[in-house]
Image (tube, rainbow, N blue to C red; front, top):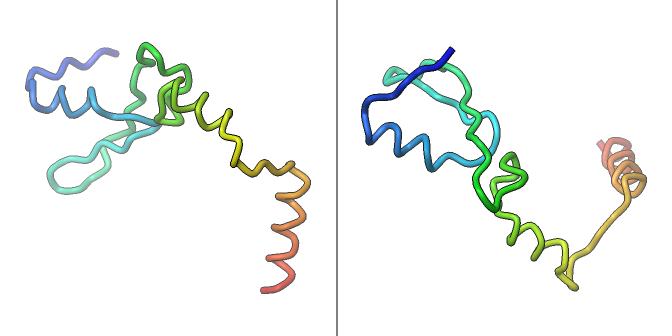
Length: 83
C-alpha cells in the first residue's frame, strides 16, 4: 500500500528521519505505526542513522576500544551476579 503525504511540512519531517522504526504518532499521541526511511546515498546502513563516512571514521578511530562478544557476555554475567 502506498500512502501519499500531501502536506509538504509533514513530508519534510519524514525526510529528515534517520534510523529504523521511527515511531509515527497522531496529534493525540496515539501510535499510528513505524516509519522505515529509504536508504539515502552515502548511507549503506540507515538503521544506524550515520553516513558511510561517519561509520568509516568510527571503524578507523585509533583510540576506539574493541571488545569481543565473549568479553561482553562475561561483563554481563558479572553485572547479573552483582545484583
